[in-house]
Image (tube, rainbow, N blue to C red):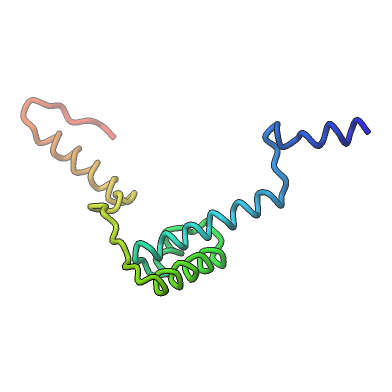
Length: 113
């Protein structure tokens, strides 16, 4: 009897059951899909941007938002971000460009790599 009472409070300690994690993950994926549709993103772009999310749930959220937007004549809201974050290759090329610029300045010593 004590074991049952002790285990009943595991959620208060931060332990989540597998079912709770699965339900939360599905809800988050559906929210991602709905947000992608509201932002006017194609479903393929949404899959690409959210590789770790469940694709079936993303599609379900995207489809639900699509139906809702059609029924209520809601237009997509375009994202207001100016540019995508730099990729790893762009960051490495920027770092190498900075090294070249630093070495070409008069009075600076060349660094050894």
